[in-house]
Structure formats: C-alpha cells, structure tokens
Image (cartoon, rainbow, N blue to C red; front, side):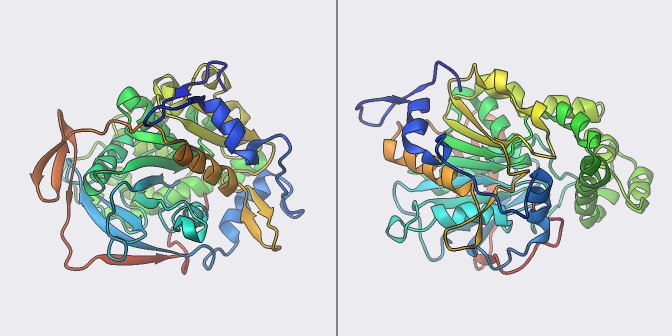
Length: 429
C-alpha cells in the first residue's frame, strides 16, 4: 500500500479514516494472524487452479437471476443478470448495487461469482449485506447474444461504462460498488483508472487480476503446465466462443480478418492463447499485434488514475499470470489501491476447508469484510454520469454519444437459475 493512503470522506461528516486504516481495522481476513488452510490434496497453485475446472460446483451457492438485454451504441448486445430479481424484489430507494465482471468466457453462472453473491445479496437479517448484484455477461458469453461482428477483449472497458450507465438509470438513488474476477478484474480496473475522478463506483475489489499482460505472456510458456496446458486451454476457450458465434463473423460484409483466415482458424485442431490473440483478437480490435494488444490493455498502466477505494487480491503462485505481473511499485504510489498477496491459492482458487468440513473459497471472507466496511463507514456519494433520456428505457450519457443503452423489450422477465448446471464453455477461471 501507499504510505500516503487516501482519506475517505464520510457522508454527513464525522471522523475520517484512511483506506489503509479501514482495511486494517475492518478486514481481519488479511491480518497477519489469519490463516488460509489449503486442503492437503491442493498443495500448489496448479492444483488450486485446475480444481476450479474439474470439481462439481453445480449445486453450490445457487442464485436466481433476472436477465435483461441491453443494446449498446454500436448496436451490439450484452446480457445483464440481476439478483435478487426485480420481479420479486422491486427497486427500493437507496439500494447498494454490486457490479460484477466475470473471467475469460465465463458469466454469472460461474461458481467463483456465486461464491461472493451468495454471501452479499441476502438481506442483513439473513446474514448478508443486502446488495443487489448486476452481472455483465460480456458479448457472446453465457447466452449474451452476438448480433454484430464483435465479441470482447481483456480491456473492453467501454461495455462496463454502458452497463454502469444503465445501473444509474435503473437504480437512480443507489450507491454502486464493483468486483472483477481475472480478466474481468483487469477490465474493471481499467474502467476505474480511465474514469478517474468521474468514476461513479464507491469502491471495488479485484481477484486474480492479470495486471501486466506482456509479462504474463512471457511467463505462461515458461512453465511446464503453462506451455502444455494453460495456453492451449485458454486459446481453445476463446476459439470455442468465436466458433459459437461464427455466422455473424463469416457473413460480415467487411472485417479486418478475412473469411479465409477465419475458416482456416476454425479448422485448426488446437490453438494457443497467443495464436488466437495474434490472428483474431489484435486485428479485430485494431491492434498491430498480440504484443501491442497486451501492452495497451494492461491495467497496471491506469493505476495512477484510480480515485476510488480498491482492494486487489492476488496469489504469488498464480500459474496463469506469474509473480512478476504484480504491480507492486505502482501500488506503492497509489493512495486508493491496496494489494493483498497470498502465498497460495492459484488463479481464482483459494480453496480451504471450512468449519463444517466442506470446501469453500477463502477469498469470500476479505471480499465480504471489505464491502461491509465501506457500507458501514458511509462514504460520501460519488457523482454519477448525467443521463440524456431518448425514451423510457433508452438513454445516452451527457456529453458522450459513445456511452448509452437501450433496454430490449420482453413480454416477461427471463429468470435464469444458476448453480444447477454447468457451463457449455470452458469454465472455472
């Protein structure tokens, strides 16, 4: 943390604390006396990471969502999943809303998302924090429809801005918080840093943020599991996502990637992450190469712009990103960012044996404690972006024609039960 930790202003005045003081006082899961009791059969980061994909979490932390589809300014569509559903829990004044950004090809169904939401969305009388959660399913993920030849990438902060604007419209009196997982952590951090003083979030948490994609890209093939497992699994997950929506891309009248290149790519038996980024991701989004893409979307670069409280949690044995990706020097100069690094836990693992003998995710403790601390402290309300209404459920941000939404009409709200089935795509991290 920075020696000059930011002083957090309270609503209505009162004794103020710094971010560091708040974490030290209110997040005991990060105290030196705390322990992270990894099961004996998960001895290292690889084991924790792989367990996320092979273990069955389908009946753990079930969540019921209500889905809404938002058309964005470029005519693309994203699906947002809301819990508790609006149909059973109408909007109330002064709600606290938690914006959620998932990991690679994931969605609201992921067990790592549900592990947090099952603890923060119940009412306080039921032991929760009373949050309303809004999960952005990035384009093409978890049933989010693709109608334009664009998916998303590890720096797609523009779609975050569109959904945040919708939250400001749908919950006009709310305070907004955020949490991002893995790739979604990078996107959310990038959004907060780019928005700077205009960021409407009261605070946010990141888990397993890759931070520095250039260093991560060098690290991944340097280990046995990275070279022979992870880079193929991650590349295959992205290729599967693209293949799922291939018709939109193959029928597009004009693309920076030729139809022949796409068809050849689909016919390959396997692809690595860097092959996907070099052949598909970089040209589709206007980057010169995979290395140019990695350099420009890395969230460590925007740390100086972050002006809201952030708790970032990473593991030193993360086999996807490696230890050199951690932005320790940048964090030391950022008053608003605290970085907590564990010795174990892998990439979005952090499994431990709970008091009742089951396996749970340790990170839920510091996440809940940090969010509860921000709620209890009662920060001053952040300024929200101005809305220009173009219809009942159609708006753009004042002064920004590139930020907006239109809620697509449905005769009935769609309820999505999660925690009762597994993902159709690669899942876990």
